[in-house]
Image 1 (spheres, rainbow, N blue to C red):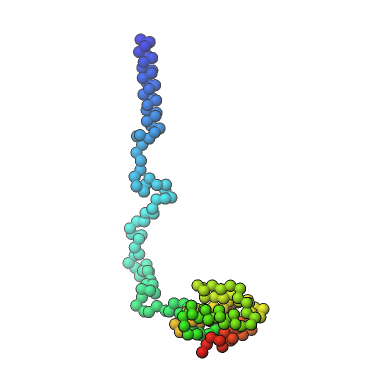
Image 2 (cartoon, helix red, strand yellow; image 1 turned 30 degrees about the horizontal axis):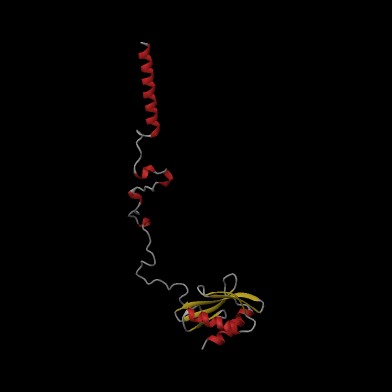
Length: 174
């Protein structure tokens, strides 16, 4: 009898160990499928269908974009030359052609120091008669617009930028 009790204990211990091993390895776990298997913050947002589409009332209508309206859209910024002023002028040719001509003209003007130039931006960072400003070349419908811009991004209207633009205009404009 003693043998049968110890055999039952050994068998019980073996069954318990097997059940524990199977339970901890996940053999009986039922895994979530698809997006539910992801962490909650990684799951896609579920929006009820009635919240996807605006209602039928006039207050819930989405306004039409300017690009979708029947009226022609206004010209893109930078395609028309700004009004003539002391801070700029227009020359014939493309932006790249004008950029090269402006660089040559700046090199020929006494007292101009070009700190840097950026052809993609169409700008020369210059120092002239104690003032630092940008000489910008922008492509417009009529050719290329050349202007002086101060460090704040506003038209440079001081004495030095005005004088330099007048000299550039004399060298470049017909």
